[in-house]
Image 1 (cartoon, rainbow over the protein chains, first blue to last red):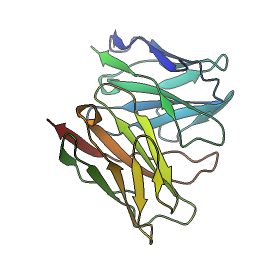
Image 2 (image 1 turned 60 degrees about the horizontal axis):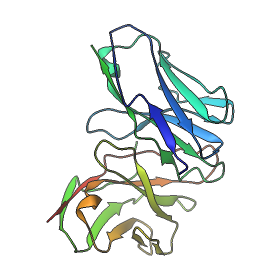
Image 3 (image 1 turned 30 degrees about the vertical axis):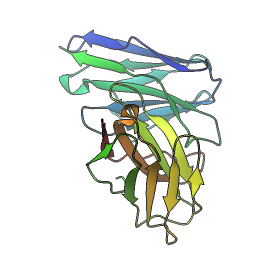
Amino acid sequence: DAMVIQNPRYQVTQFGKPVTLSCSQTLNHNVMYWYQQKSSQAPKLLFHYYDKDFNNEADTPDNFQSRRPNTSFCFLDIRSPGLGDAAMYLCATSRLGVRYEQYFGPGTRLTVT
Amino acid sequence: DAKTTQPTSMDCAEGRAANLPCNHSTISGNEYVYWYRQIHSQGPQYIIHGLKNNETNEMASLIITEDRKSSTLILPHATLRDTAVYYCIVSSTGNNRKLIWGLGTSLAVNP
């Protein structure tokens, strides 16, 4: 089945130690998103790609970077994780022109120790 | 900020209809109403969307009031697997528009 895959499902990193989360999709969608969701809060959009065109949200900290080497893969890099970055990170995809219908992966739960 | 207001939590008996309300009194003419849900420890799932007409699909029905200031998502025969947080989102459909998520309604379906 076509889907959005996130690895790992759970990630533990140390304070200040760079970490990379990955997302892949078999839907061949143009648009890929990264959201941050903290406990009992709504998902918050960090950035998105339309193909290779990167769109950063104005309030996304510089500590968060992203790469999209090809249509299928997208990475979230946290350069120096702080305790406040502990959260669920959700990857989503959509087709251009149908951006309201986003397909989400299961998320990666990041713990910062 | 989210443009919608939803009750924090609701309960529903298994097999009964679940009616989830949403207020969006500042909705503008080109904005749609979208519903997503998020089952615990999973990513959100798209349910349905509408502009002004009522909509139905295999998952749910969406009833939008004539003045479009509120809507109701209806799960006709709720099951335990429908226990989730339900998000009502208002946004236009332009390519640069994003979904702005509120806190949603936590629906508990009870046996």
